[in-house]
Length: 258
Image (cartoon, rainbow, N blue to C red):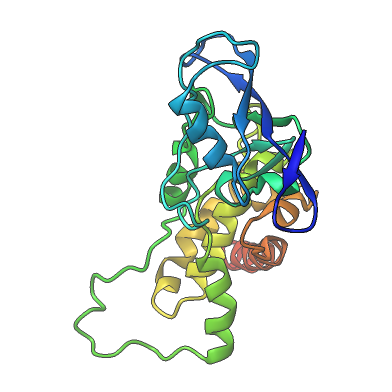
């Protein structure tokens, strides 16, 4: 039976979700299905909240609440990343009305699973440390106003500043896996962001040393999956191309110094 959903279409009375679960790191995964009451405008997080209030499977068996990660609920923090119907995306902006049912939810496969849909994204933050993704202030803070930045450069850099370290680009990347040391598109994008900052470029050489080393930009296979799944539509392939050019110049300069 269906009921009006306010858009001139019929809507199901229930939403069916099929969720890949895991009790703890290293435990074998298993699947459970859930049927939750439909509400107009609900997203995947709303459905998971309903399961938490009544953790009973579609077959009527009592189970444990599903674990997931979330924060801002407005696609800013990047915490609620998961695979939804096979696509890496944010669950807070995944509207049930726009998804085929059953809605299949899986944790990211490129990160260690902590429990159910929650994964450990520590490797992404470690990568940011490796490339020194910050603006150095020591020795510059007392020199007066910093260099001015052209509006055109501000506009370019702003897009890369929207990266929320959600992991979607890495989940979709065939080069990023446990058989490769590839640092991934997100870190390359952040290296480009800080290399183009008037003060941040003081560490440009250090970042390019990382990018020309093992797992650096040369390991990118140019699949371009990263730009297809990025929730913020960040032009990651532009950054990869730019960093590739910077690495070439950096390598030549280092070679000429010897």
